[in-house]
Length: 121
Image (cartoon, rainbow, N blue to C red; front, side):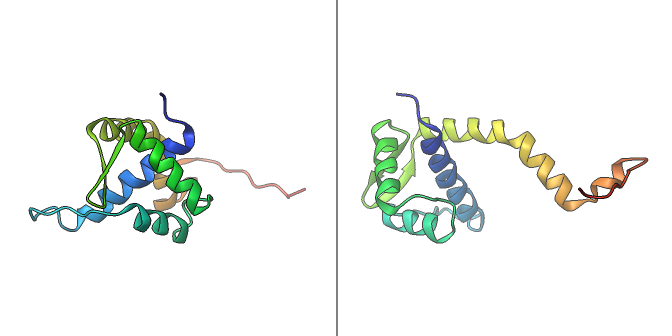
């Protein structure tokens, strides 16, 4: 079963959370773990999910059924298949994120010789 856009979004959110959370302890032989309830709480509080708690829980169950995430001993983890899909999603989004990053860090007008200004309608 192919994951839906919502499931890919949740998988991307979970993968990004793991990536950022583990960044601080990457030089140690440790890794961060998260439970479903904690992840759902994070998604709602951070505003990254416009869904209700039950809908997020259901989507996590569907990701688990698709073998993209695993949940054992109260730990939510990406499976190998989930990591591969997360990497693929990141590669697809990377060009767009690079454009946004470039526009945020530098003045976009700097790259143009002439920029015209007009009155708003």
